[in-house]
Length: 71
Figure (cartoon, rainbow, N blue to C red):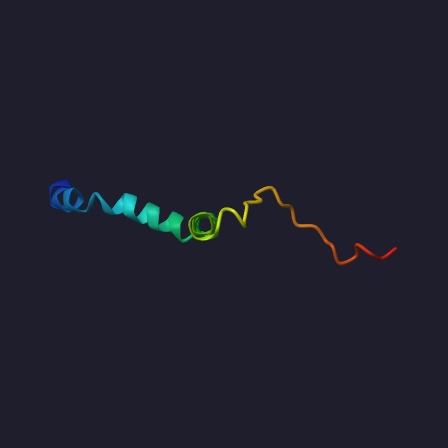
């Protein structure tokens, strides 16, 4: 008994689910949510803040300034 003809219509109808599941898996990763959140913050800052008063600083590093004044 050949089962290929039984599953061929099912595969033909549901072929789009594989890319959808891959994209859903990528969207749920912490990497993507971080990149997307950063994009939304940059977009809203660019669109909503006054350009004459605020400017973008993308090359900031996090430093430990809690010990800056101590010897």
